[in-house]
Length: 93
Image (tube, rainbow, N blue to C red; front, side):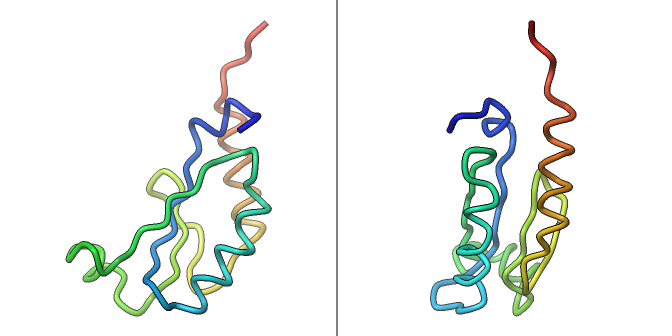
């Protein structure tokens, strides 16, 4: 990644294999965060707490524990989250 902010910003998508909505959301999210943040895709069926928490309400996108959107991608919420991460970055000279 080109941007040091990316090391601080990791979007998490809660998903499950075979979920078409999840695949579409991830495909739409990747170009928005490329070079700015990383992405972790979490299979909710791999952990009982995730399965219980999210159930059928997937995909869910979070950044640092803050839920940004679910079912469909909220581009404005993603952009705002990236701006907030950038604003927290220390200024180096």
